[in-house]
Image 1 (cartoon, rainbow, N blue to C red):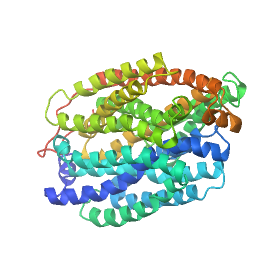
Image 2 (image 1 turned 90 degrees about the vertical axis):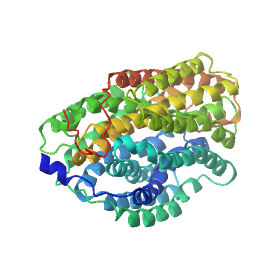
Image 3 (image 1 turned 120 degrees about the horizontal axis):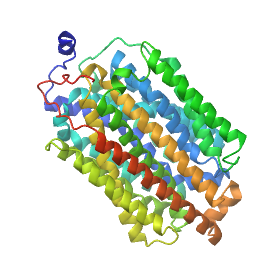
Image 4 (image 1 turned 30 degrees about the vertical axis):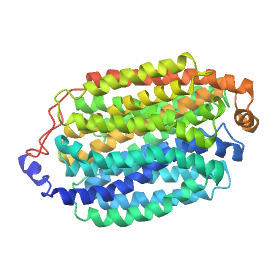
Length: 494
């Protein structure tokens, strides 16, 4: 074990070299981050153009589903071949999907293009986090947090504004065309800078069967959530059958994880106490953030009666709050022993803010909504860096990509499930189905507005419940001392 640990040690790089690599990787990361924020404010316009509100959530769900499926594979591929070729492949897939989306003649084509986008985008953020984990020891990661903050500030603020502006004044397809020049620049810059990254190649096998089982189980579950209460009753044979099929396939996936020589989700990583608790905490927090960012434009345009551009501006407190919370938590984490306290307090604040919105969803003062979303965003932001750094700190260096991929897998899975769940509540409880209902939603119908507001009461309650589960997991997570330069691969799985 000592020999293996010594071999895994990265070659020393000075601050300037590390900064050069990080800037290149952050540009690639910006692609995926921007795509998650720019789409939300354009969704109502896209639904109106295609006359389809019922399948609107699949524009997001398809991206999250394929991104979820590919994330563990990407982490393992990075462990085997190194991150540079894997990152270039992810950028290429992302650009192909973006072009398909921009040219989509129907909702079905758009959903298909988003699925291809997800194959590339799902790996970009995971790979960026893996590369940072290889370069920078956990205790010093706050020093480079300014680069993460720059990416998420840009995507969080520019994304909703650009999405709303393109949808209202130009055309929604521009939210996908903008990826092409960004992707080309990211590929050129990251390929050059990643050649300086020390090689960390470890012989592994890819569990393709496990990936297929996981993807099939997730598809069945998301179909049940999306069709329940809309196409079929929740207690119908179709929905119960999909739920049963999903449960059976998940059971098969669990058997595969327990018996495969190189499972998609390794037992050695899953058995680590920090991973077991940090992963669900991050999954519920990320799922809540993505679900709210996707559904809130419907609330803002259908209940508050804002325009697409205005709803983009109204999303800024939520997204900027995430950046503020994440940046603050990253800086504090490297300087204190009890680094869990900040996310615990942040989650409590987020839960209370969501309960306030659930109390009066029909006609809340705009300032109350903005404050509540800001508090919720700060609370969500504190969870993400603390859980990621704690997980990376708890595993040895050869498992860095796998552990980071595992964390991002469940974050994507939580995002997909909660987004679909929020969407199912909005559709089924508001009665807004089909093109006529979309016209009612955006055209000013009072009955549709009140029904939508009452549906969002349950969305806020569901979000508060998800953050409560995140809080419980965060409290349970062990606070292990963060590694410094002395032993970058010393932590071993339990």
